[in-house]
Length: 492
View 1: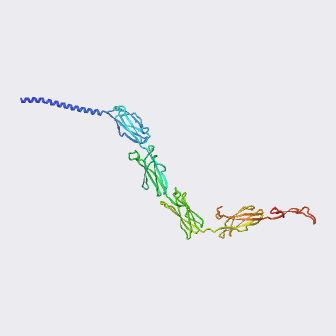
View 2: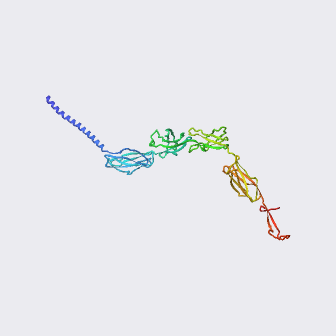
View 3: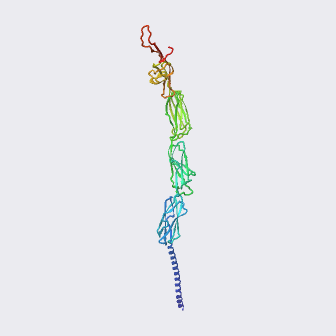
């Protein structure tokens, strides 16, 4: 009984366990099938996606490209539209046709955009799926144009100065077509000297003014100073601006010869220039003139002028013969040559030259008879031979001019013939020009007064050649005419 009862109970328990296992297995199978169906459903969606970067930076006016794709459960072909999204700050970006392309499933499609002309600006393109399983989906692609910098010399890039004066160079900066408030940092590359930052004005001009006291050629570089609070696209790549600076040497130079000679008592003008090849020194610069040395008993003295037009004159005079050293100097620390020394040789003053009469003055002459006039030329009492004497004569003498040379005795003569009688003051003049320069003030002259006598005479007027017997009268009266040098004579 016990046994039978146990067997019956066991038979009833086995089917119940099997049914519960079956129910659990069915439930698990349903869960698995649901999950599989969900994954399959997700894998079958249409995806409209961007391939690669969605933002680009490029120069204004250039052409850029973006890539997109329709993926997975989309139709074999998908229609899309491409449009530049307002506002377009580049000033006219355009889609390179077509703007409404049909793309192929799972195949990358690349489209191009030509950017507008405005630098430092941006915009975007919107790609819209029109059909094929992704209708209404959109993609946005952004573009930006590079900043445009114009960094250049404002004025000459090569300047000339000298050791005494400043030089000035300047830069200008434009950003995207307008002045920019970006400063410049200047450096002397030749001497590795930093000049530092110069602030740009409202026009974008940064100016450097400096002095270089050593003569030579230099390169001064200006570099654009970029903002530190933010990154200004393209600023760091702007190339520097180089300036060539030529510094001319300044010196004191002679204009007149450093060695001169002159007669005692005759002032000598000594001249120096001060400055460089392109720039004279400032007007009013003091130039000091000094007599450094002189012969024993010398009385040399010099007076000088301040600089005017780049030059200074020193006027030297001495009456004692010998050699004098005269110095011109200027206070100039960087100058290689700041003083010059002139050697002035003072020679004895020349003996005086005299021109005197060597024939009678006043002279006496006769009408129609050549008259000789003579002068004597001497220097210090000694005759001067072979010197030119110029003669001139007034009416009634002829010729009116003559030129003769002095002989070994220093005497020169010339002959003139009067054509009328009378007294003629300064009728004949002899002249000598020691320096040969007309009207220079050293000319010597001697003038002769001349008294010209008449020549009396009688001329037969009638009755000449008659014959008559003794005691008989001539048939015609015998008459004569009295003249005086060809003119009728009265009261003879």
